[in-house]
Length: 88
Image 1 (cartoon, rainbow, N blue to C red):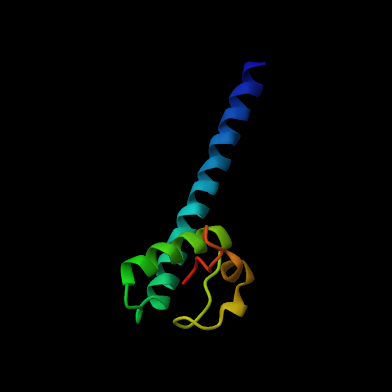
Image 2: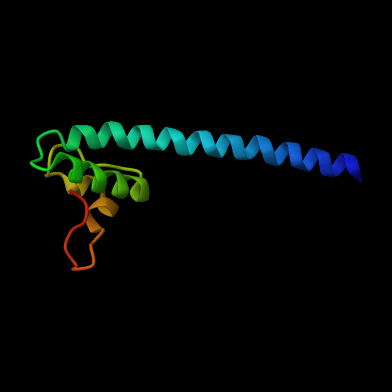
């Protein structure tokens, strides 16, 4: 019984480490894509903040500065509390 429990704990630890690495890779992707998307924005910090929030939810960022939202429907469809587009 102890062997089964130890094996289960080891497998759980290994699987959780893989999931942690995947989540870290996603944030690097978002930072890179959002930096490019917000490069010409007037309010770069705000653009970068909201772009990262949207990227984390959608796992994609449209190319270009403001256009091409059709490339990522999830990113395009996120609205703020006023019903306006949240993602830059």
